Image 1 (cartoon, rainbow, N blue to C red):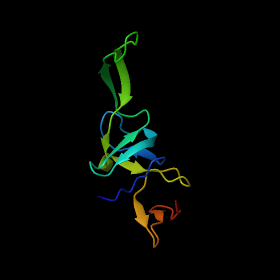
Image 2 (image 1 turned 30 degrees about the vertical axis):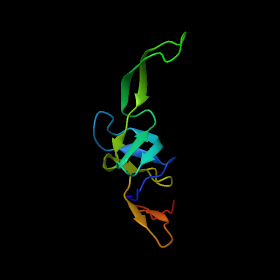
Image 3 (image 1 turned 135 degrees about the horizontal axis):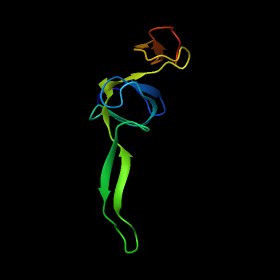
Image 4 (image 1 turned 135 degrees about the vertical axis):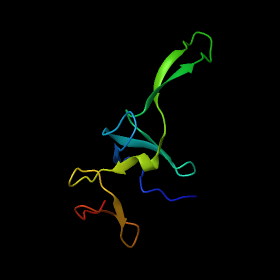
Length: 101
């Protein structure tokens, strides 16, 4: 499995695509596909079929996955999108201000 620089619950900024510049929280991470799902970003419309009697189907808007390379971690201290460095013990470090997170 590939190791990811982003974890669930991190705040990230989208670098490209229709949601460019938008910041959001990571909901799910898929290391096997190298993709992330970000809250309120990359919204797509899905057609839902009613599964039970009395349940309504229709169009539902949900977040779709993005490639991890299209997002960049936002540092909680300097509040800017930044690359991630690593210290011993797996501690992530902001490349701009040196803050550990």
